[in-house]
Amino acid sequence: MEMHLKPVGIIHTPFQQPAGTPIQSAAAGSAEGRVEVFSDYQAGLADLEGFERIWLLYWFDRVGPMQLLVTPFLDDRKRGIFATRAPCRPNPIGLSCVQIKTIEKNIITVCGIDVLDQTPLLDIKSYVPQFDCFENSRCGWLQGRQPHGRAADERFHNR
Image (cartoon, rainbow, N blue to C red; front, side, top):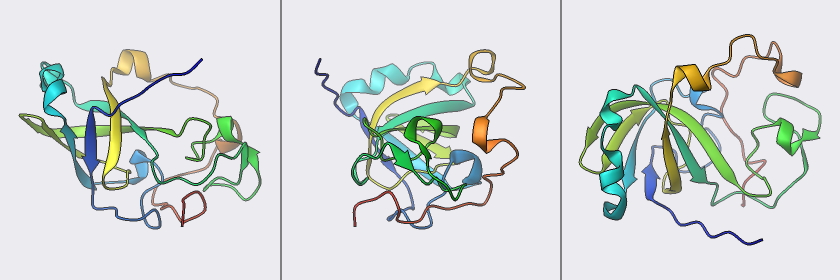
């Protein structure tokens, strides 16, 4: 089976290279970015202003080759790619939950961004706490680890 994706926009951020980019939106603090939705898709932004947060789905366009075992940022031993958020995936799709600051025409200004500048945007989905938050969920090898304040290095990206 073959699938075809095309970007619906582009993500603009202050992060020009992987090193120093927050490893998750929860660790990005007040880092601000702009999500530019292409004009063909602008009508799809209707009613989004009522939401506090959105999920951004994007393409890791500068990631290195796919790896099934990786040493993730918060660990020092190899883990299966599907048990991590590492970008070097079979389908390099990223996911970030960001807070909406403003929406003006086709531009969404967000904070808590953890994405490289000029990253292709695949989709936007509204964050709904009743659907997206599961209290007391197990988190495997990440149990007790705190991602706040961590930034990426070059381990998963093309050089």
